[in-house]
Amino acid sequence: MADDKHADAAAGTDAGGEAAARVAALDWPRIAADMDAFGVANTGPLLSPAACEALAALYDTDRFRSRVVMARHGFGSGEYKYFAHPLPDPVAELRAAMYPHAAAIANAWAERLGTDPYPPTLPEMLARCHAAGQEKPTPLMLRYGPGDYNCLHQDLYGAVAFPLQLVVLLTDPAEFAGGELVLTEQRPRMQSRAEVVTLRRGEGALFTTSIRPRRGTKGDHRVMMRHGVSRLRSGTRHTLGIIFHDAA
Image (cartoon, rainbow, N blue to C red; front, side, top):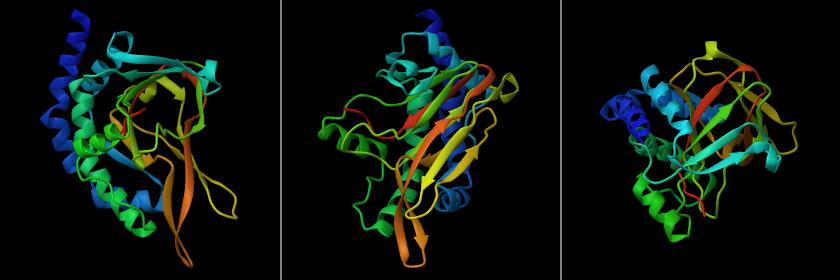
């Protein structure tokens, strides 16, 4: 446990007030415009290299509630782990700092689609989840080695879901090849569109969890999106995934 505490503390030195300040300083009008146009947006830097290294070091500790080996379930190849409560401070703080900005985008979408709005703060969103019996934390860390990949999917864990989620690259891209974030958009009566996202260490991608609005000639309509990770050709890749709803 001493190593666990050391890694958590090292990450916390970056991700306390500094992470919140970085989130507030992001170009949110540009992010919202990219989300509207593509269903995904590069956030820009969220964590320092030191914080990324410290978070990645948590992977082999006991900070997690479950481990998923993707090949066992037909999800792909590689593995990921869901954090247990309490979440590491950097993860909890980044999740809370990102949520109100993501909620503003989500509520603009809800208005366009004529659906119910989302709570303005993360505690209110989690209270909604817990009232529906979804109490398991969903932030996770993913680890890929050579040949690993993640099939296209959606991270839905119950009746209550938030329409946006975040991934942060923790590994220097010079240390691996491949492993790009891939999103597909299934458009009504049209062929699907793909989007490929590359990140630098510490950068995040905010993207659509499942459904987003798309403006057409007759107004807004729903399009379905899925995401995955392309085959890693060499090296090791760690990412932090932040999902804003909890699981049943």
